[in-house]
Length: 377
Ligand code: ATP
Ligand code: MG
Image 1: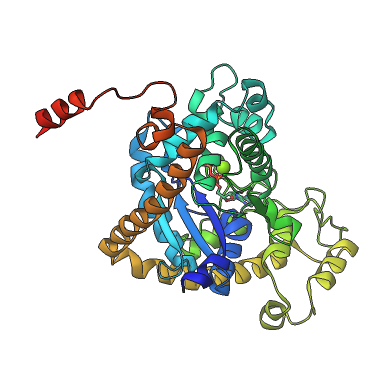
Image 2: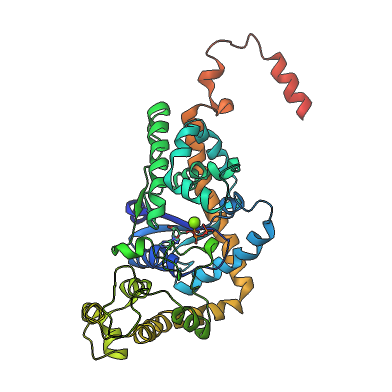
C-alpha cells in the first residue's frame, strides 16, 4: 500500500464556500476530479477554501460559515468519496498560513497586479479603488495550499491558469534560493473548450456565484426548467424560419458541454447528434423552444441523481461535518511534514540545528544549562 501510494500522483483542488456549486464547477472541475478519483491512480486532496473566500467577504463571515456545508454536500452529491479522497477545510490547516508568509517574500506587488484573473476579479467586485491585501495576494496563499500537499495536478477551469503560473514561479524561486524542496503544480483543464469556461445563463459572462447567472447542481426540476427556458439564444433568430447562429448561443454552448448521442436517441430521435441539430438551426426552420426543451431534458437527466444523493446527505448532516473534521486532521499531518521540510530548507529550525548552535560560540562548561534544567524541573 505504502509503495503503491508513493507512485501515485497527488491531485489537489478546491472551491470557495461562497454559495452552492453550479454547472460551471461541474464541467470545469468536479467531473474531472471524480473521474480521476475513481481511476485509483491519484491521491486526491479536495478542500473548501474558506480562507480564500474571506479575502473578499471578510465583513460577511456568516456567508462563509453557512456555505461550508453546502459545498461539502455538493461534493458528496457529485460522487466525491471520502474513502477515496481527503476532503478538508482550509482554515483548519494553520500550516498553510505559515507557508504563505514565506512565499510572500518571493513575489512582487507589480507581479500580483499583472495577473489577468485577479484583474478581472478586482473589476467584478468593484475593488479597483481599494483592494483588500488578502484578496490581491490570494494566489500566494493558493501556492501554499497546493505545495503543502506536494500536489502535481490541479483540476480546474481556465481562470486558474494565471494563478497556477504564479504558483509555479513561487516554487521555482523557492527551489532556486533554498534548494529543491517544492513540487511544481500543473492545471488539468477539461478536454472540451466550452467546459474550461462555461458561460452563465446570461450567455455572456463566466457562470459564477458572484454574478447570479448560475444553474446550481441542487436546483429543483422546476427551477432548472425556468432558467433554461429563459436563456439567451441568438437575438437575430426572431422567426423559426430565420437562419440561426450557434456560436454565440448559450443553449448550444450548454449542449456542447452536456449532451451525448444517447440523449438524442432518447429525447430528440429525429437528429442523430449535435452536428445535425446545429446544421438545422443554421439553415433556419428550427425554433428556440425545441432546443431549450431538449437542453432541459439533458440537464434534468444529468442533475437528478446528483440532487437525490444530496437529499440523502442533507439528512445525515453529522456524518458530513465529521467527515470534514476527519479529513482536515489527515490533511494537516501531510501539511505539517511539508512545512517541516520548508522550515529546514530556509533554516528556521534553529533549535534542532546543532551545527548553527556551535558555529560561532561554544559552551565553556555546563553550569548554566544545569541551572536551567533544575529550574524547569
Ligand atoms: P466566486 O464567484 O465566489 O469566485 P466561482 O463560481 O467563480 O465563485 P470558484 O469557487 O471561484 O467558483 O471556482 C472553483 C473552481 O471551479 C475553479 O477551478 C474554477 O476554475 C472552476 N469554475 C468556476 N466557474 C467555472 C465555469 N463557469 N466554467 C468552468 N469552470 C469553472
Ligand atoms: Mg471564482
